[in-house]
Length: 137
Image 1 (cartoon, rainbow, N blue to C red):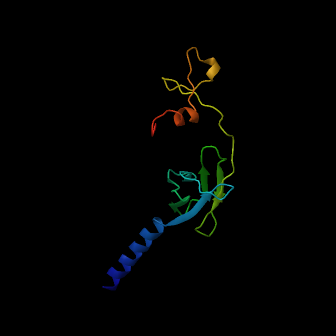
Image 2: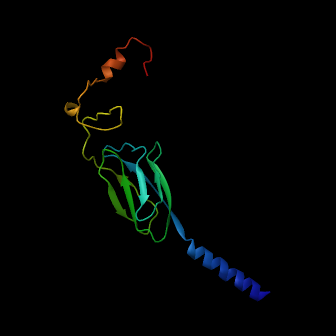
Image 3: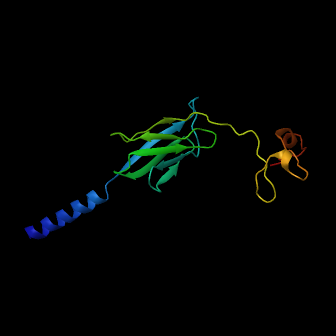
């Protein structure tokens, strides 16, 4: 009986160490302290990742071998953070290059507006608010 228990204990200990993971939690905010909704959080070198919720919070299970998290979001600089002994990683994102204008064509090809060989229509916020409809969207 002791041999069976010893073998079972050894097997469970081996499985536990092979599958050792930890849960990293945190919050991603901008420089004003507002949450960044939908920011990407990826364990570097793996295909494990998640996105932040409406409060900027995230939770990600990573293997013990992962030592770096990569945070990214459109309009902000990507950040790589080394994981320490703690399981809480809060990040303040810095604004990166802001996009000025995007032209979307019928074919899904992005180009400069002046290089297009056909008519271009512009739609701004005042067109929507002045539509006369109760809810244009």
